[in-house]
Image (cartoon, rainbow, N blue to C red; front, side, top):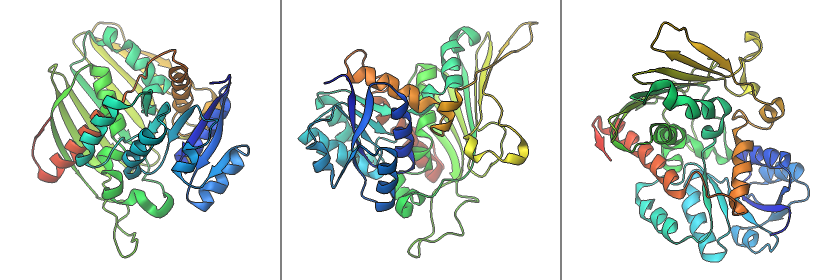
Length: 363
C-alpha cells in the first residue's frame, strides 16, 4: 500500500458520484478504477474522476493491480453476489453501501462472508456520521440518564429516479423499510446499545408512484410507515416515515428520552431539494431538555458548506470515508461491521413482514 489509497468502485450512479466528490476532498486518496455498466452514468463518473480507469466488468476491476480498497455502490439486489465474487477473486478492504442484502434467503450467505472474509468490510451507514446525529449519540446517555424511548421521524421527498428504475420495485430494493430505513434501525441499535426482539408495523403505498408504469407494471414501493421495535434492554424504538412531505423544515428528527431528560436532534434535508420560497435552509440543532426547572438548551451544529455541496447527507459521507481509510490502513477496526449491516437489514425485513401480515414479528 502506497501513500495514496487507490479505490476501485463498483457502481457510479447518484450515490456513487457523491462518494467520488467526497473522496476527492480527502488527502491521500483517489478513485483509480470504476466499473459502471450504464453508459450515461459511466460518462458522468469519468468526468468527475478523469484519471480513473473505466472497466468492463467486476472481474476486470479486480484485476487492476493498483487497487488498495473497494467501494460497492451498485443497486441493492446486486450486493451479495458481488461480495462473493470479490471474496473469491481478490478480497480487498471494502466499503459496501446499505442495505447489505435484500432477500431473507441471503442471510446465511452474509454470515459465511463475515466468518471467512480476511480483510476489513465496512457497511456504509452514513446517518451515524451526520454531525447533529453524532452529537446526539455522544450526549444521549448523560442527557437522558439511560434511554427508555427513542423516536425517529423522517419526513422527506419521494424516491428519486434511478438507472433502469430499479428502486421502484420491492424485489430489487428489499422494500422501503429495508432500502430507506435500515439506516434508522442501525441507529436504534447503536443509540440504545441493545438488540431488537419484537417488531410491529403499519405501512403501505398511499401517494407516490401510483401514476407510474414500467413495462406495464406499477411500482409497489411503500411511502408511509410506522414501526415499533421492542429491545432486549426493555427500551422501545419507533420510526415514523412519510415520503410525500417535501418542504418539511427538518427532514430527520430524532428524540431520546429517559428518567433524567430528553435529547433531540433536528436535521434539514439536502440543500439542493430545499424549496427556495422558504428562504435559507435551517441549521441542524441538538436540543437537551432536562427534567428540572432549567429550560431546554439548544445548540446549532453547522456543517462545512464544502461538505454540504459534496453530497446529500450533511457531510456524513466525508466523515465516513475518513474513518474507513483508517481501517484500510489498519489503524482502527470497522465501526459498522458486516453483521451490523446484516442486523439492520434483518430489522427492515421484519418490519416489512409485520406490516404485510399485520402481526408482531419476533427476532
